[in-house]
Length: 451
Ligand SMILES: Cc1cc2nc3c(=O)[nH]c(=O)nc-3n(C[C@H](O)[C@H](O)[C@H](O)COP(=O)(O)OP(=O)(O)OC[C@H]3O[C@@H](n4cnc5c(N)ncnc54)[C@H](O)[C@@H]3O)c2cc1C
Figure 1 (cartoon, protein in one colour):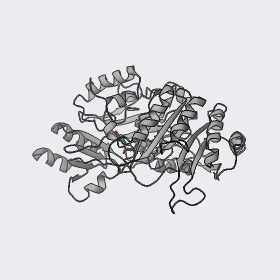
Figure 2 (spheres, rainbow, N blue to C red; figure 1 turned 45 degrees about the horizontal axis):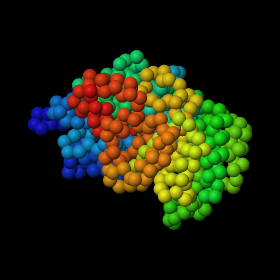
Figure 3 (cartoon, rainbow, N blue to C red; figure 1 turned 135 degrees about the vertical axis):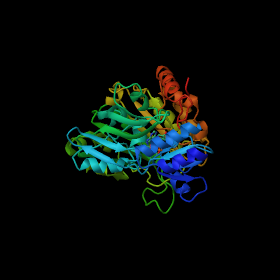
Figure 4 (cartoon, helix red, strand yellow; figure 1 turned 90 degrees about the vertical axis):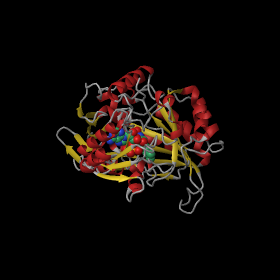
């Protein structure tokens, strides 16, 4: 590597090479089914470290991967590539006047929630506090209050991006690349910081209602009908899952197959209680912790797993959720179905159906629900169980969400990426890719090939 190595040694953060101490810790992330194995990891601290690393990679013709947390690791960098690790870029600046936050590429959702709450504000975060703010927005971002506020990507005001030519660019709505970056997950460069809108939400009414096996189907059917009646200020998800029969899971949940309805409502306790009454009427709950809570407790609504593990997920965005679609889901992944996955159905619509105000390339906005199926798995192959879910939902599927595809690198091809967009959007993105990244340096993602 000679001269270029000296350049990167002097300019770009801390460097870890394959086999050196520190390398394994730096590539490790939330996804453990596989990890990035690049030749070099640049542990970036500042935007300039990122710029220098991209310039170095471009000169060498090396592909570049980015990792903040590893939640969304799609295609691993292997052999000769460079991984830019952003986890140290954790600066947060809140401006209460403009209700915006400028966040570094390595900021976690939970840290932004805490910082915004000091000003009575909240970011449009999703279910897990340990997801990275940048990666979440670059995939669209379906938040806890998504039906009221829309995709998080629609609320980005500014992006700082290092493109494949090693240039640092500040992008705002109207710039050619701005919208293309929001929804295409790292295909156009490395975001070093972004400015996002915050909303004046201090508390929400929310939590979980959990029903035991005999009530799974009644809960599912009641929830479907109920979603047609709720206001946009209420966003909910229904999950079907089996708790493992192990001592770490306390009774009465141990070994049970349950339906769990997760609710987030931006409104009063009294109105929330009134709205959820038809759900409580389904019957006895194994768990019912619906309450008024500060947004800083919003991670308890979904209670996503906090520890790294091996998983793969697929999803289907549905134009409608008919009683027949529910029957198809129950037949394949219900309590008596052949397939064991963690399955959740998120209610979409509301502001999610509106066109993006800032040009974010998040498509399939006509979807009324998105079904996500997660399987515990090792390696890069897509488990058969995920295929079975997709097949069962095919008659109602209008597309797929790129943010809710996890792992299964072996299945991450062009066809999969194309299904995340309309034909027109994909063609436009492929054209922009030719212009801004003709050598496809940024290819360790749900990749858009340059035309
Ligand atoms: C438990 C869990 C819960 C989730 N909940 C939600 C949810 O409620 N709503 C939702 O919409 N999504 C959700 N997601 C999906 C999540 O938003 C995506 O997986 C997202 O890509 C994760 O970003 P990350 O930075 O944490 O992960 P990483 O694996 O570090 O990054 C994922 C990818 O994003 C790109 N990327 C990350 N940072 C940058 C950057 N600075 N510049 C350029 N590209 C970058 C890269 O292509 C990278 O491979 C969830 C995922 C998990 C595992």
